[in-house]
Image (cartoon, rainbow, N blue to C red; front, side):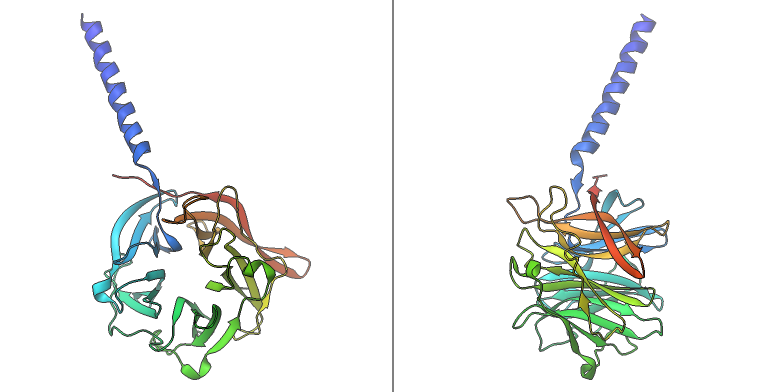
Length: 313
């Protein structure tokens, strides 16, 4: 009788454990972020992106595989604008966190003491109040000079840049210039668009990664341009696009390079919900590297992507 009882107890334990695992698997879902950006700070990954109507969401992870929802890092009550909170990027500078993002088709910047927020605009005013602009990204050169790159969407989507004042928020108006505009055939299949810039520097060469086509197009993709001077001229690669329609994904684009805890380079990007439905878009991660061929260096983004998951706790 005692053996039978032990057997029953063991079977119950196995059943319960199986149910817990099944529930965890059942609650896994893709990370619903478009225009994603990943910050590594104090051994934790923070992901931000476009999704909520009320502001900018934040997720955290220890391994890039499983993510926890942390709520809104930025709420619209603390920002300029009432809608269209898009494309955030977060940097840790001077002991504070700076979020560069879009609100109501205006580029903005907010600050916080924590990567989870709450981020707030000191003054609820866009960086360029009178211009329709989106997708601002920060780049600080080796000499410490800060630059902002962004997309001007009036009369065509083209990428511009400008130098910032030392406050990292104020644009030097006299330094504004255009970097690139839609010019390659692949960029014009689904709308004439260049957007979602991000900048890195390698071996003295500046690399600008950007998206081509409109985001609703299945042919949305990633290309890059290079320059020997941060102010240009920028030359688009003949190898573009370097990421487009990988695996079963469509509408792949608007991401950013980042390094993991071991110093490996990755590229985070979004794709459409599926081949028939655009929204909600989801976050994906691919390995990335700058390779050498002769005297030339060129970036590679793997088409073998990882699908991050959110697991309900």
